[in-house]
Length: 84
Image (cartoon, rainbow, N blue to C red; front, top):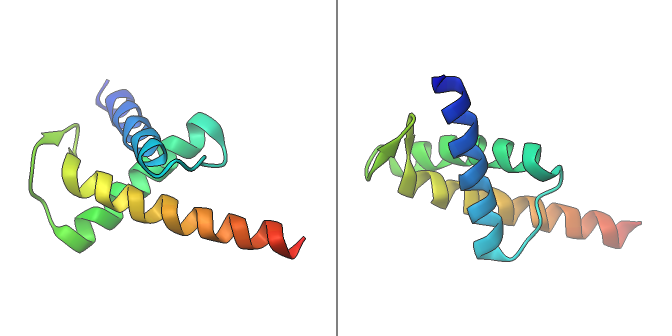
């Protein structure tokens, strides 16, 4: 059951990062989950473990890491569209 919560919280964090930046994450729900999980990892590496913790995610660093990831992915996708 904890794995399902892990996926749900990862998806919510990825979705929230996309909403804050106003950018769509490629891949829909799966993309949101991946962005949330990778973003949580990036945030944990950059900011450490602080703030409220839900299902192995420290929420504040996870959201900040997901924002960074979504921003970088949106820049890459934008440059790929211009190159085509």
